[in-house]
Image (cartoon, rainbow, N blue to C red; front, side, top):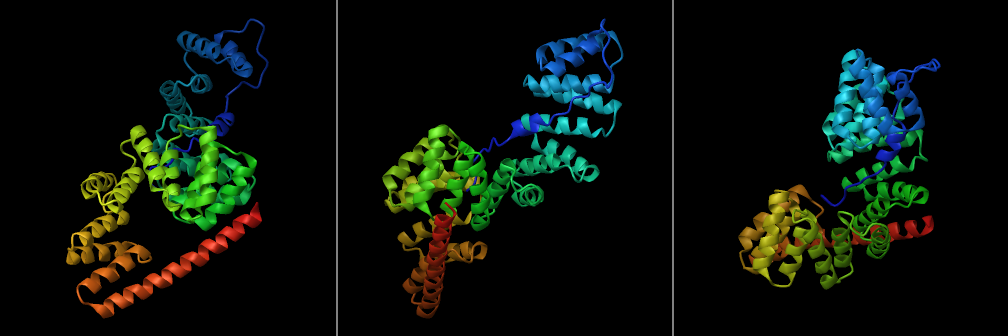
Length: 383
């Protein structure tokens, strides 16, 4: 489900792991601004630390420790660009310092510059292969870049070493969900929610259950997410999908409209509004939403399928056939496409081809019913 989630996971966890560069000697009674800044860091007095370190730097040539600690103070104050600048200056004086590299990566993550974070974390990964905080932050950064396979690979490494890590379990389960690996995602996200029932966790669990077509428990999870954080991005869109699955098209439209009011570029909401308008027979409105969805995610099989359905309704069976074959090239198990292609063949008098497509549809439908039933029973046993 594209663009359905902004996981704010545990940057706080990574913040807690930020490194200060403190001297290993006791400061004298008549401390200068540099030493006073170190003491302010120890006490968590970040504004004082910032001001003292700036005085220190103005009075003597800066050391990498001072620049690094100034970056830490800026990070704690939420001044990410200033933190990044300070850490980068520290690295000029102490190239490749792993503590500074890690702190810099955290600042890039908090600033939303995940590509830069990946660059630094990848270097750290090679020099500090056993440092799980680096691996977990790398997984998080890959996830935010939409590189879900890489995110899953890194998160799996952390999960193997620390299966109890709820933050990482949420990253791993989220990556699995984005990859459509719902069966793998379910137990991992269940673990994460048992440890920390965050709004993001309930949203991801809800989306995973939607992928498994377990609509009632999905709505339960999404309702819990709404109770914790009603304005969370992706929530209305996910609730809309759940209501579509339960046959509540009116309620679904209301959710998708709310999603589009918050974000007109929500692919999922545009796609489903197009689908629901098409099913209601409002083809002009359907085309408007589907065209927007196509702009946001060109060539997506679901949008191509909807255009095929519109072509079928217009009796343009050749166009529908071409579009449906395009869908099946990308998603051979798209059961609706097989069903509609059977109809397109039948309308053109190709009975043998129509029968073949209908048989595939029936086979896929039975497999999906069996899978949904087994997953529902397994989920019930895990509660």
